[in-house]
Amino acid sequence: MLKLICHCKKVEAEIDASKNLEKVMRCNCSICKRKGAIMSMVENNKFKIVKGKDNLKMYQFHSNTAKHYFCKDCGIYTHHHPRINPSLTAFNVGCIDDIDTFKLDSVKIADGNNHPLDKKN
Image 1 (cartoon, helix red, strand yellow):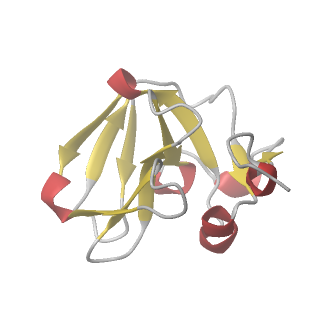
Image 2 (image 1 turned 180 degrees about the vertical axis):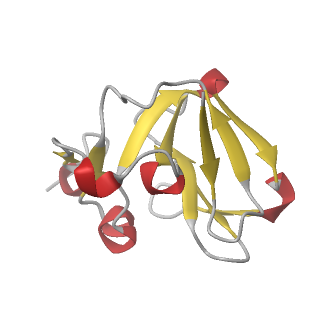
């Protein structure tokens, strides 16, 4: 079980996953590029907010399908539900104290600039 904590410690989540995450990634879409987070994903039932749910603020843009959450006090992005598969929760690996994101070997880039759900001319 992993413990996710925002910077001010007002938001906490439990993630049913091991420290050896199967897949870690960055995304180059407009919001992910700006937040710069390294993310991983689990099924929604493996991610549970255990503290500070009322401290989370949701942000949506473009198609208003994905739901991005951040702490309203410290501003840290904690997790989101991606529009490609809302049954998953992507979470900020940097919010897990047991994982040093600077020591991760292979961080893939998800091409959010060319999202399959966007219609390109």
